[in-house]
Image 1 (cartoon, rainbow, N blue to C red):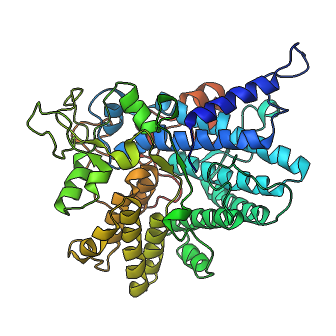
Image 2: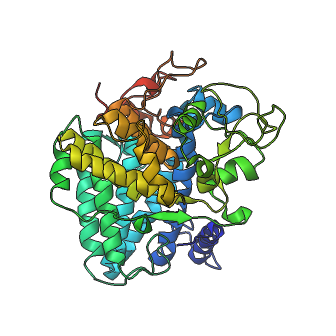
Length: 479
């Protein structure tokens, strides 16, 4: 569904207006939106989650996966692993203080009115948000979170306890969206609203996310993803079923990457040479959709594709040296894709490969690449590409993960999980970094938590030591 990010901002403004009265009642908190209906809170949460996922989260993790290699300022700091607690404040506060809080309000209000389908959507999205947070940070506030004034210092849950709770939450969400109880979300559902098979689409999204999470546990619970896949769950089965939010043409509506780099005038978000060189080596037709060529001719590179070395600080404010994120994901109207059909097929390929079912793995691998080509408008180029010896499936995990890494250019946070799980693609830390050549494996807890919830941190995972925290592994990230 087409979304105006401005519409999201207007919704937030409307929420504020509706929550205020002409006279102040000191017994009511004017910031606690008690009278706001679920149909206003849901799109607000979806806007904010997609904007954070495609913005701050992707910019930090994309530097680790060497999709991006910023050449100055904050993006350069990320590629040099100069990531400290204050670097992650925005991610944490956006997810906890806005998205998860709004989704909880959707659940609370919808339960009180018997609108189970709204409850289900909230549960699925809540599981998604928490899954991204725990995959980046490890142990996080979960069971005690979102209690507002009743508990402002929530304890940290172990990741190994969060994962099964997320699976349970997704199952409950599926049951609720399929219940046909109460009001079905309409145009206020910016992901699937208005579609005739609305409940089935949310079920597929939830099951696909469940498969992703179970696959993360390949070293902890080797058969979990396979066992689930063998139940033949409904999964995202075409690009048309991708859950996504599409942004608009004006500055108030812009895609987060476009807004950060282009509209701000920063011009800091160069693409990594690791990624560019891989596309060029494969003569990958997707390069014209994924990347913009060098814009200006100050270095003789105009119209060509070049990336910045990881950690390199060659200033390119004049856009003479490096490519930028292309029209598919870096234009004003580009979507933020929550999960894609291509990703689901890559997961299936990996699961079948690990089970020794090479023909099934090959089919899924080919489907994944063909789906990504089609999504990017290059469907006709996929067959020839798949015939290349350096692309055709060769029965190795490395081949699956390298091609998935290309596809996940639009979701580098998930590519980061893949790299930590599998070691592919093989990456080398940049020459200049703050971690003694160790590519980060976890985000440090934010300064906000150190300041406001220190005792819970100390009782749980511990207060992060600058730059050392980046080297620590989350629970499922086994050597």
